[in-house]
Length: 138
Ligand code: SF4
Image (cartoon, rainbow, N blue to C red):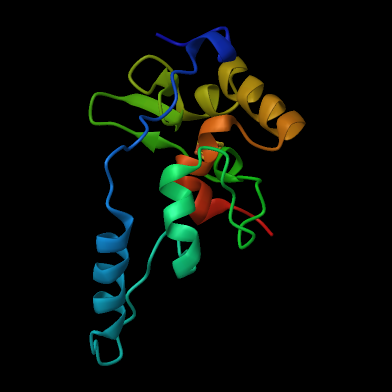
């Protein structure tokens, strides 16, 4: 089912509670020390140590390392095995078994999302979405 009302359909991402950020930070520090030869271990998001607690405990936290604007809806889309095409988490814009990729990519629901995102810069849920940290522009 494609939504015709972005705000009403926006259930957002679940908040993660109960994360022991001190323990998490210990683990991250241990991973950073691993000798990977010439391989790179990437952290997404790649927060400074003092930002990790804020990320999990402050819903409005936005790292200064990221711009607050996500380009993912202009660059990509997720296609699930059942054909559902997802622009953002929980925002289905179509199903590839019903319409062509181009119809969905240029369809009303996807265009509405981009217009809203351009207007707002980001949605409240964006700072908790991994794609924000892959596709955020500075
Ligand atoms: S960061 Fe926001 S705009 Fe980007 S993919 Fe996630 S929910 Fe969508």
